Image 1 (spheres, protein in one colour):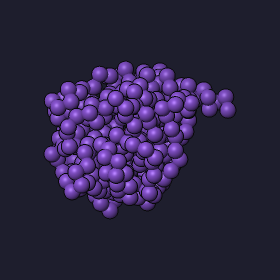
Image 2 (tube, protein in one colour):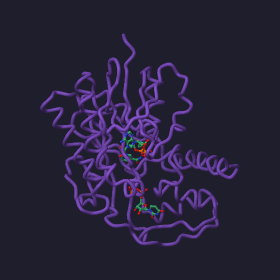
Image 3 (cartoon, protein in one colour):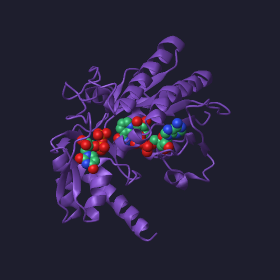
Image 4 (tube, rainbow, N blue to C red):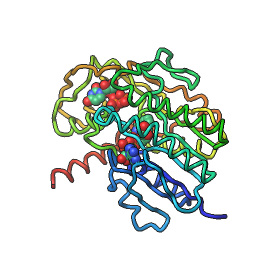
Length: 318
Ligand code: NAD
Ligand code: UDP
């Protein structure tokens, strides 16, 4: 059998780079395409030289050309942290809309299976809790986060249209807050921010009163869920996330305890439209993919802490 060939857009980002590792380990040839707007070639540096790995710098909102056959297209390109998509609002809308269109067009031309990286943000500030895939969401289209949420909602609609009208084999994963090594320490997300602050003895900046909740998933579990979904026959969206929900204030305290830090917590203004609750209903993933998280938050945090400590040491040594 021929080696499967897979394109990963956004492959030099946090999640994309872990997917490159996983698919290479599964015997795929991987083409990683990225414009490095929020990712970095450093994330895939260890793969350079692997004859089955190719890194291409390209903005996928423009026509995507790939030589030869393709079996899978995984569309992960998009700014993903709130400060990133607030800094790049138009680019975020473009990669969700035009980028998804280009990636789907490529999948159609090659007869490849397409997988879209969607998000729990399609549920917005949810009125249903926990969130099953059948919930349509509560999104403010004209709010600051609308650039990300609506881009992903459009991307899901475009993916379904290519499936229904062009017969493209499609999969949609709705990823909940994922963490682990290779997150940028300055991406503004709660976990890298809190860990950096705790290790540097700075106050941990909790937004609002910290009663808003999230459900954090370790990256290996997210990658496993995506891998299983890719090889399943599920066309409908699938939530992948650890249902273990925690308030952001308790999360900050957990990181202070883990790092044995003297840092206090300080409270800052809650950003506009910040969802107040979030927990995935993972019944579909459990039943259809036989997936469930294997890493507790505590274990994931320990593994991530080692990475953050290394990064800070490297920064300190210039
Ligand atoms: P990331 O910023 O680390 O990775 C995104 C990558 O896409 C970066 O390498 C970036 O340079 C690249 N990119 C952006 N626009 C591009 C363009 N026009 N052309 C080519 N490359 C482009 O973010 P991440 O956390 O790894 O997220 C990856 C994907 O997963 C995103 O689509 C995101 O919406 C989705 N997702 C992530 C999470 C999470 O918790 N990390 C949760 C839900 C959804
Ligand atoms: N958050 C916080 N302090 C920070 C960064 C984030 O209190 O320094 C909060 C943020 O307001 C949100 C939660 O932590 O309620 C998770 O934020 P993150 O940016 O990690 O992800 P998202 O909001 O996209 O789920």
